[in-house]
Image (cartoon, rainbow, N blue to C red; front, side, top):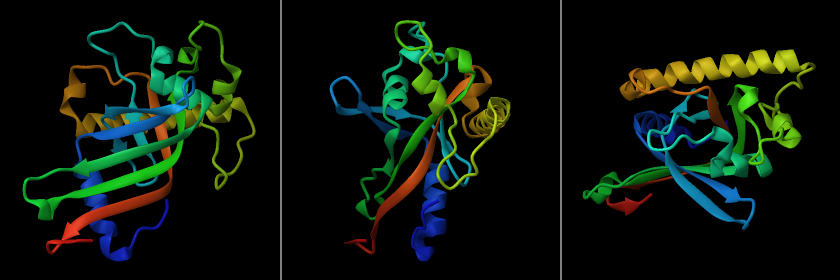
Length: 190
C-alpha cells in the first residue's frame, strides 16, 4: 500500500475503518466519462472490498451493473472516503486511486449480451505487478475464493444489515496505487 505520512497513518486508518460509506468512481467505457456511485466497503489493511449484493428493487445480474462493466473495460478506479461535519475542524477526506478487479463466482462475469467476456475473465483477480504471477487457473480460483470469504467476513462484521441481506458472491477489489488525504487541523487546512 502506498505510504502515508507516519504522523497521520493511524488517524487515516481509523477514519477509513470507521467510515460507513464511500464513493466509487469508474470510467464509463461507452462515453469515456466519470461514473460514480455510493458504496459500502471494507479495508483489510491491503485492499478495499466493495460487495455486489442483491439489489432489493431490481433483479439485476451483477454483470449488467455499469460499475462492473466499466471495470471490465478499464480497471482504473478511485474510491473517495469523506466526512462532512458542521464543525469544519472535523472535515476530512481520503482518496484512493488504484486498480479495480472482480473476485467471486466466475459464472457471473458475462457481458451484457450474455456471452463470456474473455477480457473480463483475465481481469478476475489478476496479480498486480508487485505480486508473484499465478501459474494456474485453479490457484487463481482458490485465491479469489479466499479473498471473497475474507471480504464477506469483514463486511458481516462491519455492517449488521448483511445478517438479513445477502452479501453476494461477487466483490470489487480495489488495490491502491496512490492515497491522498486531507483533514482540517487546528482551524487550518492541513
